[in-house]
Amino acid sequence: MTAALKRQDDTAATPQTSAMLGVERSARGQRWVERLDPARASTATAISQSHALPDLLGRVLAARGADVQTAERFLDPSLKTLMPDPAGLQDMTKAAERMAEAISHGETVGIFGDYDVDGASCVALIERFLRAHGQSCLTYIPDRLTEGYGPSPEALCGLVEEGARLILTVDCGTAGDAAIAAANAAGAEVIVLDHHQAGEALPDAFAVVNPNRQDDLSGQGHLAAAGVVFLFLVATMGALRRVGAYEKCLAPDLLGLLDLVALATVCDVVPFKDANRAFIAKGLQVLRLRHNAGLRALADEARLTEAPSTYSLGFVLGPRINAGGRVGASGLGARLLATEDESEAGAIAARLETLNAQRKAIEQGMLEGAIAMAEQSLDKCPDAPLLFLGDADWHKGLVGLVAGRLTERFMRPSFVMTLDGNGIATGSARSIPSVDLGEVVRDAVEEGLFLKGGGHTMAAGFTLDWKKREKAAAFLTERLSASVARSSASRTLGLDGALSAGGVTPELLDLLERAGPYGPGHPRPRFAFPAHRVTWLRSLNGGHVRCTLQAADGGRIDAVAFRVEGSPLGDMLGGSEGRQLHVAGHLRRSVWQGRERIELMIEDAAETQDSRP
Picture 1 (cartoon, rainbow, N blue to C red):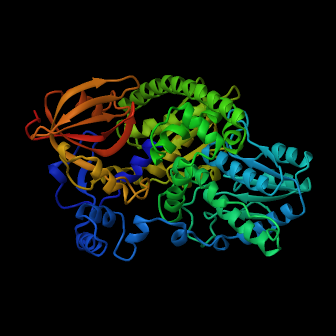
Picture 2 (picture 1 turned 180 degrees about the vertical axis):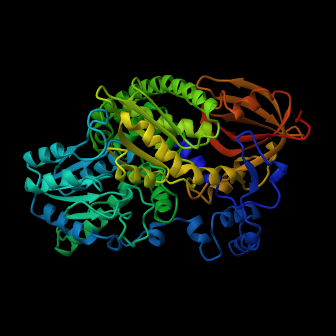
């Protein structure tokens, strides 16, 4: 998540006539600019005055698209003002009425879910909703390593054989034509609840609810699959209410399920805009109540002591849930999130903790090999617009993580794959801003260069015959060269202002958090710390660097840079002890041994005039 979030945020600023602090090219090859467009400076002032806010917060809001009329929705992202009408999504009413019919008649419902956090959250949402209506369901999560992404004819027909007459595919299914046709032939009806980009042709399902289908005009394409499922449950409950289902019993508390929607929204790295911000804000409140047995057990296993935040969702809980699908049993995440049994939750959480440790070790070995391979490739062709790497020994479940690390390090799209014994490669790709991978991967499928594939703008998955790798790489290079060049030429780091170490206080963070939650599309405030001296520095395991920065007035702040060893940023920091640097990053509050502390999370650095050779 980290790399994707940063890459999307880095281009949020509008280039200015002069670089901030004169930084034209930083350690990460970026031009530092003020995030707030000068043309919106008056808007920032108006926001501050009309809402009685400090100037800094007005500037932060204006830089993220707020104005006087909309600022309150940024400061208080509530479902009342931001929740869309579920009926606005194509096929939603039809799907909800069919689900309500299944519940009313006691039909057996089957769920086919993806194995990532978003998919697991979707499965848990529906299982909990059905349980609240006194019904159980059949669930199928494919094995990531042996079955791969999306529904198969065998899996859906297996659900039909077990008794399912209505099957929901969640976080997948838009490209599941063959599987859905097989389920139809076996006597079931299928509802697709998805958010992945769709081509012109859709599967022959009873309903395809996907805000990213080409004929959907809802404007909700930013939703995670769990957001789509939540709207589906709202619509289903409305359909049930219309037929009197709640006249003699209480309707389920859907708001109590928003911790799962928040988890999925953060971990799937979708834009933090509109309803997504409300889902996250309300979901974090629900999470603080610790009602979900699985999330409670996982937080305890991870020794989380601070209040739930987007950081803990995306960087602590999310990776542990994903570990099940990556290196263990794909169904563990959904089971954890759906269970109400304390003992089962504790056992699953402990196993996920172990699997996550294994995942880290395997990933590190893969990453070291991939970096060496990438450097060798770039030595031969330094201007290559992308990396296209594969190895038979790489773990299928971790190629996406490695692709993300390579993209972050080498600042270009990365395609990383592993091979099976039959010469078939399965991989994942991660992108940089303004370079659409989902589209080019779908085009490669249509050209016969990939056997299958699809995804989002910033991430995609694919399968190809290894014999076609050179043709596929050439096709991708030709298609992406221009957009990669444009993206690289305009690499900027948007900054919300300059701070001194002594000016960082808990009150400052409290102020900034008023405009949260922050994430892609609504980036966390990032600041420059001009001419701060590195007074202490230490390299840590995992390629991290921890240091202390001191301002000219003596104020100090602790700082950390993740996974920078061997990178230009790592090299600059590593040789900086005792010298001054301009440093840029965002602030994070954490609790250690019962004490609160504030750290700077370093994202970039640049030489000062005094420190340049």
